Length: 241
Ligand SMILES: [Zn+2]
Image (cartoon, rainbow, N blue to C red):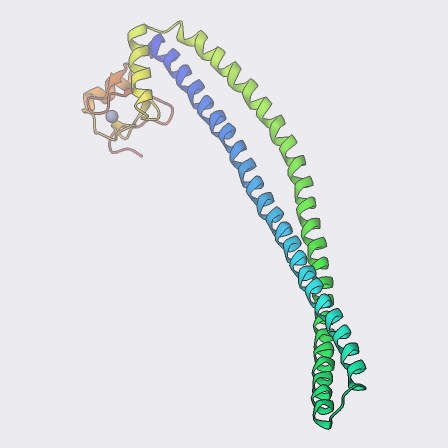
């Protein structure tokens, strides 16, 4: 294989490593976003439970106030009962007293129910807070690990880029331009092996004579995809393998 192609192959190896490290680096903020969304949803569970308790307390205040008024009314009715002049008025007052008494006992039941509801909501609130806090703690630990990993990856990629610059400066400029052009077209590997007598990139069959020349160390440019086809460790002729 000619020297330039060997260098280009080293460049390609470095580029593959850069691609892998970059992909790992992209994975880190993605994982963080997933954690953040999870935390956000747990936080909103907690906020909702808090709101629910507020509502229960508000209903409690309303019913308590209503009960207080009714108790006053009842006392008032009972006082007035003694002042009633006619049987008719007396009976009407008794009905009102009965009505107020019923209302008070209904309100007592309601207040008791609200008390139970508040207790169970407070339990839920404690539970959602615990889940949220536990997860937040776990997320912070994981975030530290991820930040550490990110630093290592950044260092790796810096080294790889330096290495790339060194190799690059030593390669024939026309060959390099072609390589960069094919690479930026997102065709994956630019230097490929002969694969069963075909271009390892686009799988176009190459003439047998070309395959023999590639086997003897010549480099060949695929007429279809433009990749450099060389003989690699796993290369093979047509009909073999
Ligand atoms: Zn090809």
